[in-house]
Length: 115
Image (cartoon, rainbow, N blue to C red; front, side, top):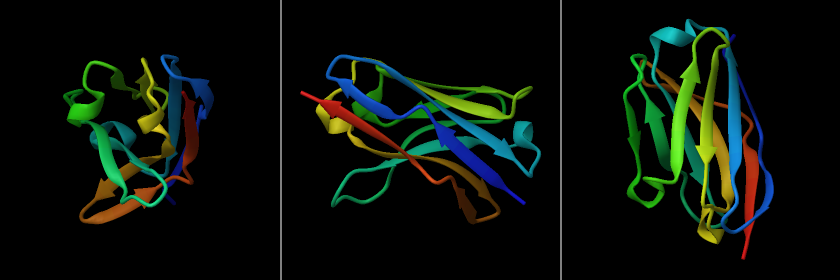
């Protein structure tokens, strides 16, 4: 079955960096787009970045120039490099795979940015 396992979260000071990883299994990883979402306390889950099967990327405005999504199809892994982190980036970050209208989610990884 589909499994998405995130790692790499933690506590970092403002201005610091983290790299999140999401190891995927149970589907043909290289054939599908992958996304990173985040959910802050009291807020709705929001799409942060998306990478197509061909490597095209999209970002929400608030992370453009600071975050980079990438994928390694040989390792079935998608990454989110986060630089110049801000306290407002604090959230649980989730890996996502959408298959014919059905969303698959990982368990999430907590990112906390202190000021």
